[in-house]
Length: 307
Ligand SMILES: Nc1ncnc2c1ncn2[C@@H]1O[C@H](COP(=O)(O)OP(=O)(O)OP(=O)(O)O)[C@@H](O)[C@H]1O
Ligand SMILES: N[C@@H](CCO)C(=O)O
Image (tube, rainbow, N blue to C red; front, side):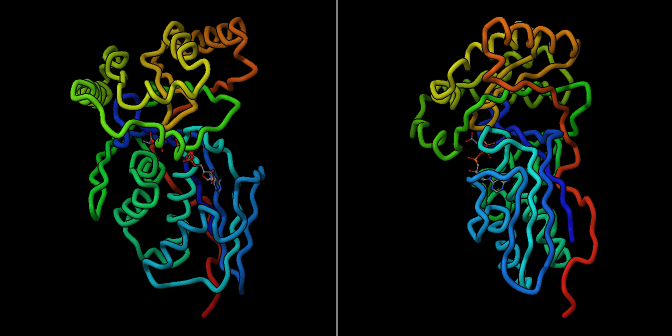
């Protein structure tokens, strides 16, 4: 059996719609083994939205690899141990896709290169901002091209931490993409290009004082925040508690705040504010570090049946 550990991820990071994302130390584990025949999928915790047949996202990602390399297991057992909350903007689908591709490639003897896996994952997800950090870790700047992903991975220092606010409802990426406008104003495009560029420079040079300005966005948050009750309250309370920028995580509904010092004071301030504004029951709160490794093998025993 092969066990693969794959991190959560947060995409967009403010202004970098579909092109910036970071892996986070919150993990799913995907265990796979070849069996004589059939497909057996188990999951814990279980969730009715996790398919147990060929529609399962991990299976579909694995199947894409088998089709690509022309090798198929006789049958397959997949066990999913899920820590990443589903459909909350924390890259649960990218973890399934990147982790599934990574596990399938191990099962079939490592026929695909890392670049090929990164490309297949981004192609399946439709954009590379969750799938690339899920695959290789770090904070990634990435663009999906015709046949490859052009990207740069930045190794995130432990000093920079990610406060995550997770509400008690789901918001599918598909729905949150469908409500975006087809066209945007030229001045809004200019606004985001400037902020995204500033963010890349500020993050990679450690110039965190620029992050509150560099994480502003006009491409997706103005439309999506209407779907998230208390969005403005959470953003404002995290900035007042000392965050260096606060924004929607991926397509939402979770919200991320960046912190680089006084973590305990920040945590206490946030907990007090959530309680006094009566938001604590509806919003989970945790502070995470970036994961700089991406998908990794947890353990490998006998991987496939003898032929
Ligand atoms: N552990 C899992 N096992 C199987 N399928 C999963 C699992 N986690 C997520 N999925 C599938 O992915 C869907 C959620 O994907 P979606 O892109 O909407 O949200 P997300 O990836 O959590 O958020 P975002 O893309 O904004 O970070 C679920 O409805 C389910 O079909
Ligand atoms: N960039 C994507 C991330 C979610 O998958 C979006 O915002 O729709």
